[in-house]
Image (tube, rainbow, N blue to C red; front, side, top):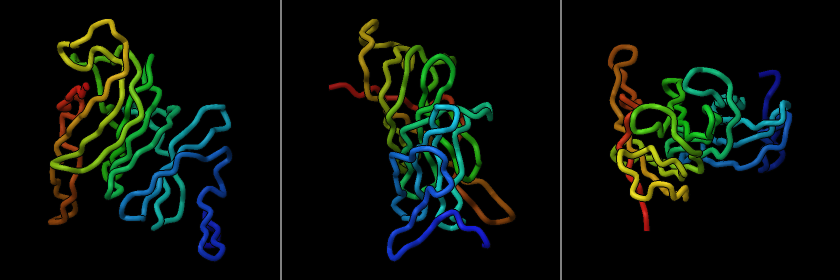
Length: 193
């Protein structure tokens, strides 16, 4: 490539040379090939970027489920680098989004139990692959589960959402794992102490 997006000096590699704002909160996948981070945008918001060591080009993945650009922050990445979760502006409150790299799609990780919007903010997620995609996140929403145990408390709780992974046929016999549907109805478990 005539123009590279990373500059190497010795054993140090600058990944954000063409990112216009402050870049913070880097997270690297266990495979060492994918890094996600958040960066300030010229409009005064923030965006989540993905840097793949294979193509050495940072790309914004701050897109909501409807395909529109959104402000986002607090990225996390699955150990294999295939899924990224982040907090994104989705409606009246910040919501946890999941970006599926293979499908190039973003999903809402924690809609309200009835399929509508959460009634408070959710954020600060982490994710792993263990019998499906599992996402732990905090939320003040009281309508993620059918029966909120402490209605009116408006305290932040920790939730665990689990999504099945299904194999899809891609180009003949090749298979890849993608997030199983319906993504909008995860198995949500409220963790309290």
